[in-house]
Length: 300
DNA sequence: CACTTGACCTGTCCGC
DNA sequence: TGCGGACAGGTCAAGT
Image 1 (cartoon, rainbow, N blue to C red):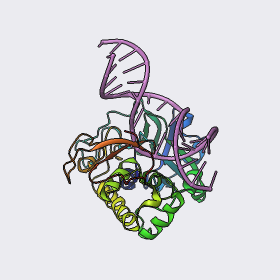
Image 2 (image 1 turned 90 degrees about the vertical axis):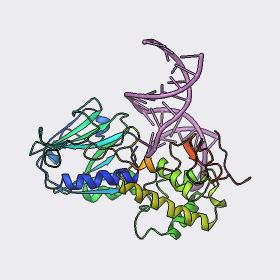
Image 3 (image 1 turned 135 degrees about the vertical axis):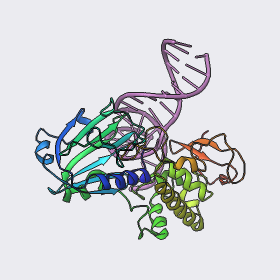
Image 4 (image 1 turned 90 degrees about the horizontal axis):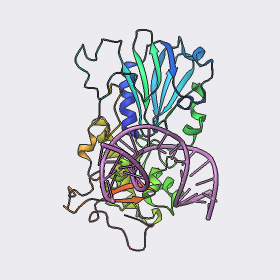
């Protein structure tokens, strides 16, 4: 579910909610959600104070004052929802607008309790997500973190670097290439489709057949759609909510994603859904024509 | 090596 | 209304 804009929205929320809180308890229902937890994981967490909340690609990092960190991946359906002490709402007692009911619920995998009675719930319907505890100094060497490419939104991630890194995947489709987290970190299925529409590029076009001009346009498109989404609190379809349990509104502004059968907002042709790189893929067939003999196989 | 496919899970939706 | 199959925003292992 969550791609870079969703994870960033959660990070910004947690950053206002967690630092300074002291952990007093940790409960997890399935070992899979906490793969490196041992019987003494409590020793490392209880009494620790949250210092910072960071992000790398689609991974969240909660730093503690003990030189340990929690590294979290939400995969498709993960949620990280903070609840104040029972009976206290957000914003001076106003309703929370949360999409989530009372917690824990049946998809709660892990609960972290704080000294003041507040709690952080890690929910994950499909159980693909995980949370790992490790020394803060080891985070960069973690098997997930270490292979990530540059941050898509970093100021020093230039279009030239984007093109150079795409050269590693020159024979695959442009969509598969930008979804590859080792090429750049943060793009998922929604922003891949939206960025490709922005650049008027068919997702099945082979990377080596895309002109420099188009690659620059794609670089710009990916960054613009992600920045817009962060400003709108991310994309909510089914599962995604922010740290307070609220949905984001980017999908109302999406040009192609989940708009199959509806008219293209630019030219009026009907948006189509296909399968590219094994993923559901949305295009305007008029704005994003498939170059003849210059593409990987597509099925519809 | 580069690249593709299926597996990991649960829930939902669609056609029969 | 019930049932089987396809599909869902991400990664990883195993295959060609």
